[in-house]
Image 1 (tube, helix red, strand yellow):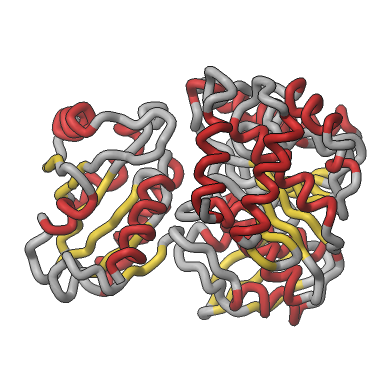
Image 2 (image 1 turned 180 degrees about the vertical axis):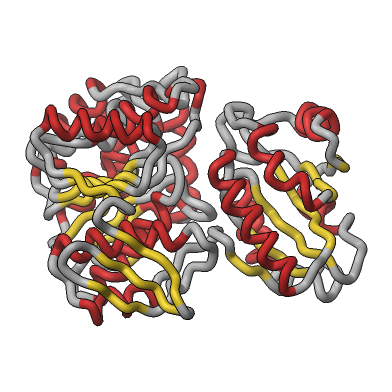
Length: 427
């Protein structure tokens, strides 16, 4: 059996161990960790990151700055886009296929067929691998929510970062912004410094109360800390200093806030201005407003953007980017879209109404609760958009026939991953 087959086979077996794909709670995770001699208690200093939007980008910024500082870093993110290996960066490098296959089989043996979700087993793999390799810093992304997420067994993080909070995962977190914020703020531990992005008032109140109970210092962006663009430079300022920095390598106005949060983390750790500037320029994060080229099925001159936005807050930011692009060159907008049933389709699409886009609907492969294409098409048509259903992503590409259009592929990180995988296969 090849290494790739071993990984795939292990994941298939993982998926059969629990009747639910998601089952929030920490009891099973703690039992698993105890069987593995509690590797989560032997980690380097941890930065724990929760929020609704921008977690991955913020982590990418912090990682790039830490490496520029000369540190060795472990990083956990989820979900992956193309390969499971993406979730595990060990000592600055993505885990190898062979090491990952061995790790998953070790986790399987430790679990011994007990009921556990796939995410819990993958988190156990993360904790084991991170505990065995020396590093200066660990950055861990929450999977879903925070309080009852499998990553929230960390007892004493060095820093908690909270990215912008909005309505998402309503089947698990509800539709109340304060309730969602309570779940996210569940990662805040006693006497742990907290840095938060600017938040809606309801979320801000929850975070403040949680920090007060935990006796944790809390700093909010835009309250004593500012980060904005001026004359083509990124200016970051707190009560002690003003940093004049280069623009982030990641595109999109919303990356200013993500960068600002990461800069605040770097300042907290005492990293130098030069290191912060280098990290801003060297950061990479696929599938977040990524410009694509070389898609053979598309007409020459098609301007293609790929972004994993999947909630109304992110859609507002993304529509602002399209508006700015139109000021440079006004083009017909076409969209390839797929979404999960737990997402707010109407709230997501409304910001794009002004562009009168043609929307191509495709199946969402690998997702937990995808909206069927026929149902998605009906929903888009009822919202007053021009909608076309397609059997797959290739067919959607083939349906773009005009030589000069702006094509936006969005709605789900699963769709982002499928796009990148297809592009790689056809290159």
